[in-house]
Image (tube, rainbow, N blue to C red; front, side, top):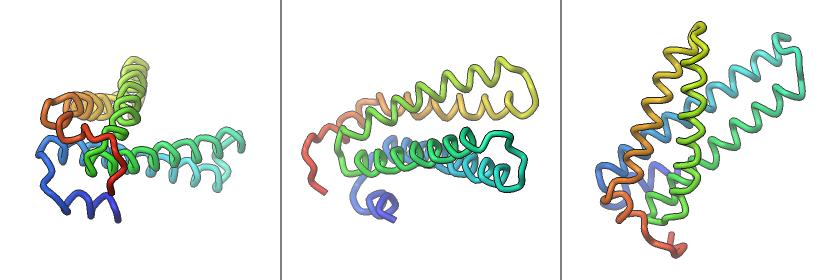
Length: 140
C-alpha cells in the first residue's frame, strides 16, 4: 500500500503522521458507511436505488481522494492540503448537524467525527506540517 510505504519511508514529522492517521480513520469510516449502504441496498432496506448507489460511489470517491491526498502530504507536496482541509470543513458542518439532531447514534457519532475533524484541521495548520508539505513539484 503506497500510503503505508510513504509513511515509513522517510523521516516524517510527528504531527504529519498524526494527521495522516486521523485522515485514514476517516477513510475507514467512509468505506464502512459505503459497505453498510450497499448491504442495505442488497437486502432491500433501501427505498431508492439511485440515491443509495450515488452515496456508495460518492463515499468511496471521497475516501480515494483522501488516500491520494495523504500520499501527497507524505511526499511533501502541498497539493494534498486542499482536499484534506475541505473534507474537514464538511465533516465539521455534518457533525454539528448530527449532534443538533439529537437522535440515536447520530449524537455520539457526531462528536467523534467533530473531534477528529477539528484535530486533523488543527494539525494541518501547524508550522511543522506546513513546512513539511510545502513542495510544489511532483517528485515521487
